[in-house]
Amino acid sequence: MRQPNHLTDGWIYRTLLVLLLPAVLTSCGGGGGLGADGGVSGSGLSSVTGNVTEIAGANDDVGGIRVLVQGTDVETLTDDDGSFTLTGEFDGPVTVVFELDDGGRAETMVEVPTGGNVDLEDITVDPEEEEARPTRQIVTFSGVVQEADCAADTLLVVAGDDAQQTRFSVRLDDAFVHDAAGAPIACADIRPRDEARVQGEVLEDDRIGNADVEIRRQEPTRTPTPRPVATSTNAPAPGRTLDAPRATTTPAIDVRPIPTETRPAVDRPRPTPTATPSDAPRPAPLATARIAPQPAPRP
Image: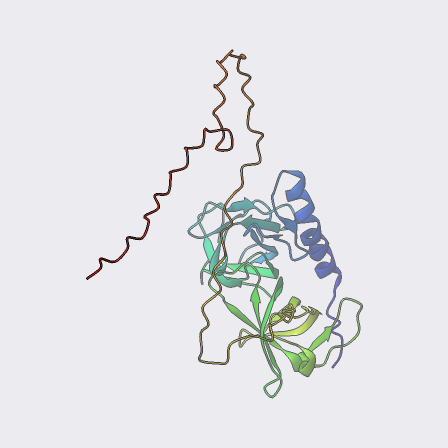
């Protein structure tokens, strides 16, 4: 693998412009975090930058050309050297239209990643063919790795905010893949859902080559291990259900002191003492009658 070296003076100028654009948007109240890709991450804003260098068949000034994204209200005018910047809520395949003062018109279609930037270098506007032909397209965006096909030397990346899950194909045999510290990363070490920042050239087959890819690994989420639950030695055997012991209800005891009622003393007549059996008069003894024997009669 080799690190690409495709920086030219014009490309450096436009890259610096793209890098400064998010700061300008933020100072104007734009929401979301800054993305080095020219958009504003988390806000859905994307951008198309570029410069017009020639109008085919004419020597007209390249300044003041009306540039717009078809189907939106995003538009601007090229400055004196033909540079322009379009920023707004658009992504996917979009048509960029160039309108001249004399009514001439040309257009080109680009694939814009959500929250990213496409830089159209050295555009020739041809109103007769109604085509705008950039020398090359440089795409920059941040996304998430969907798949790393090492056998095909292909990395599939989805822009982070893209609800349509549009996949951008990066040629790994024509890219320098590294971590945030610049250390090279092999294809086998790239995992799905790793964060990726991609910058490279859009090739004729719509793949991205001559690319620089920064991978930021995502640590797997750890599932907490449940603590073992203490079990009773009297636990029922499998398949058996024991009735839980019923709680014994102890009646509540009222421990409140019983109020003492003080009653007034009442003089009551004392009872007449009753004679005890020992003091009772004893009945007189009955006289015992004695019968004298009668003499038997004589014959």
